Length: 288
Image (cartoon, rainbow, N blue to C red; front, side, top):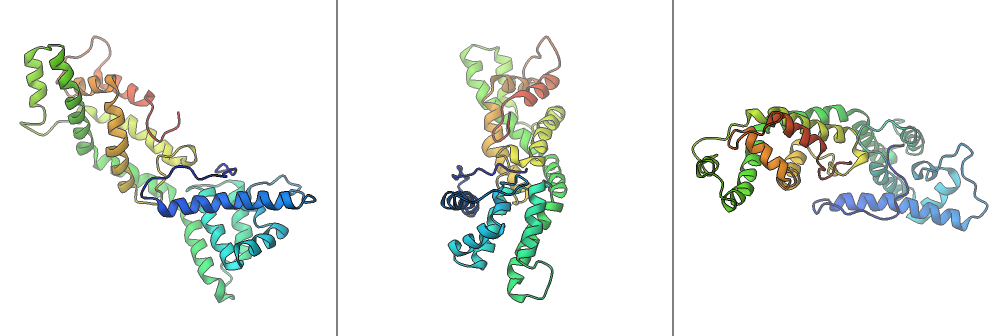
């Protein structure tokens, strides 16, 4: 199974995802309608093979006929089914329910047969969606990694600057050595921030996000799919990830130590400690 199928309510959506909210509602509606059908037909028996996923039940003869009537016709039924499938089955899905759904839908909508022109809009829309689910995930993950690499210097210079801005008031408050405070204040003023020492910690952080992108059913990091990975990463890094990282005292200290503006600790190298912290800290949108 690729996605939990007991969705009876819509979850909180990003403000830019009005269309996505409708799709979640479409998925929830099938759950509700199927539950209504079962409750009103006490003699109904679930398939003997145990299938209870709404993507399958919605296409079984008795329920299908009832749903078509409730949704206002066959065309509206097909449209709602495709909308709901975009929630039931995330990118890269290969599960049994997905395969059965595709087999049944393709029969209903005459996908690929070509002899029912009235089915063409639904067939084309389904094919565009299904191809994206089956074949695009590897490409999207590759583009995500490329974006992370391309944005490394600007992203982590921004993280260093945020760490500096958070650390300086505390340094002044505790009476830190004036030469060290001066070095901190000059960071990023006389020259561009050199972030090369942060490359290894960054790679550990990136991999956590790539792993999440490979398993989108686990969390909410990339709810905006199929928006371009570059757009998703930019929004996520600057609006969620960087503020979360800089909210962690240890990350702030280790970032500034790694770029050489704070004295090093007595134990392991700062870059190694920072990578370890990146791998264990709770991050927005990622499952624990």
